[in-house]
Length: 191
Image (cartoon, rainbow, N blue to C red):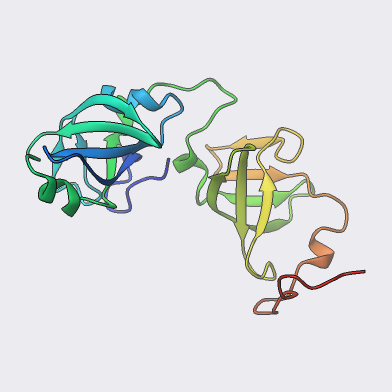
């Protein structure tokens, strides 16, 4: 869950992916660990904070929920909101155990190796179904470095100091491409 660029005390909890039906319902994609929680955080705001919506989840649908939003009454209104990200105030989100973090808290942290040498910064956190992955960017990392967000690979997260410690596999940085170095084309045979 990334923070709002204009309101850092707000965290993105979902996005509108378009209309659902003809009565003003939207198709809502939740970024919450428990997807239905998106309806429990009170009114959600747009990224700039200019508009807020009360969310009423009506039913689960493929890739999310059908929902009614306050002020949205027609299919055309719902279609116009496609791609809108919705944010909740951090204070409305539940506290997490010590070993769990909101993605928004990780983005921007300095990444150091176990010897204390800087590697780069956490640019993003992704999850494609097999667990969270930190994207580390910085000088000499080309298009970035992807590190699994596991206790073995990231033994320390120190939010107070603004850093993560990465236990780099031997040789990983030795083989990192130089900035703007093209990689092998797709389909190339490496035999």
